[in-house]
Length: 339
Ligand code: NAD
Ligand code: TYD
Image (cartoon, rainbow, N blue to C red; front, side, top):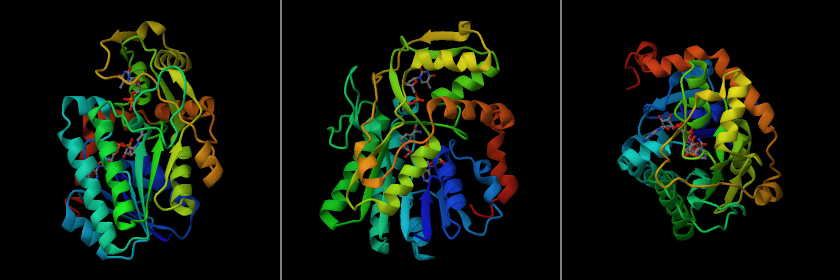
């Protein structure tokens, strides 16, 4: 696994994955293909721009000619697909980009990877494809797919395409399904970074409905380690679930964040519930533990404190996103050279 083509590497998990790979494996080389949507931020990897093992290509995974060229220009050992529209609330407002990138983009990557003879493809998917749990039970890899949102429906469609390419073409793909990630570089539209950013500005924290919905939280580097274990030790055609063993009601998490930031609970505002809001996610990680020797290593308490510390130390990063200034960086840095 010397040369990896990573898609969506300018987003939250992709940028953490690239940094972690290059820090962990001295001989790995990474090509990062990213369209730079609103969620893609080149500043997330600014520290790697002088690393000769890292290369950025601006492009769309739906652009077949571009992807074919990216795979033809160099020998690529594995493709890891992070690129996606990833926010449930946006998918409720407009599912079009989700169908395009998450489904059509995956199909293009599968076809181009197959044609290039790639020996391993990893589809980074989500536990949301399993739908919603009640108070009891856990998602396993054989839980029926039952998505609720346009986002999770598009991720499910992509997972089924991957499964079909495995069965039909013997394509060497692995699918990973993970619970809610948190950590540095998460775009401040998702619960944890949004609430930290709002609290720091003494703005209200909009909790959907009663706030009793439960998510399982995993620190982003634990997810990166899981994807890496699947990439290097996983078996073709298999699905692996990852989770953080940290289930929490949204309202409890919100109060914990406010306490940690020294802000009053009066900032909490209960707002109208999300349409089709999944009640609970929880993961059975037995398979990943048994077959990949993987376990989450960062406790929720440690990970949350690290995350809060990172956002406190990077208030300018958040402010540049909120003001839209982060989008100027591409022009300043690359002046259209790569467009
Ligand atoms: P993100 O929204 O932070 O980043 C997505 C990245 O993909 C951005 O850099 C964006 O520019 C890029 N992108 C979007 N459309 C593209 C296209 N057509 N071509 C090329 N690049 C494109 O997302 P994230 O939270 O880092 O999630 C990464 C992956 O992990 C997604 O596939 C998501 O479904 C999955 N996942 C996320 C979570 C989570 O909690 N965030 C949990 C499980 C799985
Ligand atoms: P989110 O971070 O959007 O991730 P996902 O929907 O993929 O789980 O939301 C996490 C939980 O927090 C989810 O139950 C919805 C809830 N939520 C709020 O209550 N308020 C908010 O402003 C947001 C963004 C999410």
